[in-house]
Image 1 (tube, rainbow, N blue to C red):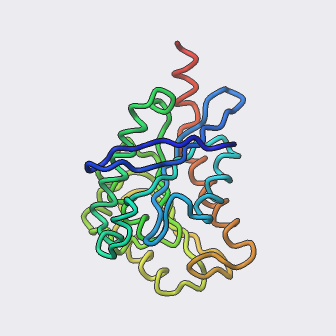
Image 2: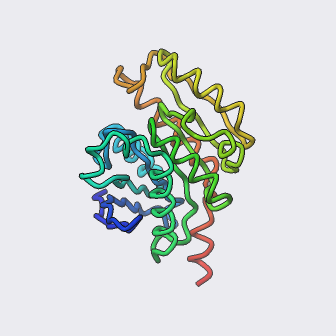
Length: 226
């Protein structure tokens, strides 16, 4: 499935994105997952793109976009400005809700590293508009506890078995979450899931969560009634 390049306006800048909208037997994608990459990465992240491909194969649309402009990405402060990243993600969700092809699709958020903190803040702000959140090697410790407590969407935290510090951060964050949530430890994996087979396991865990919690008939029911 070839991605379509899109442009997302946020905070007075334009951010490029890659949208994949797969077709299913019913004709419509079962949902849309927006990706928030980690610091020093971009929409071209090979790990996130691999996860996106696994989701596409299950009939889930995906949007990978740059959270920062090239100039902003040279500044360490911008890379760790979690409120800024969250605003950009909220803006991308708003863009998707205004697009005719996407507006009826239930939304999910996938965040990696610092992007996971942005995804959780965005989910807290958007409330019931977000149906599921997945964090891969995430830094939910960068999410204010009050925002963690406001997340309504079922949330899955995926961490490598050997990523000890990040496991502790995720366990602590899970205690602040009031939504349905779980913590998945991928055997033999470190922070970047570089070990053979570990990224595949993380992608499958993400796919299964989105399939479980994105309402499959939201888009198809709307399209069949028109």
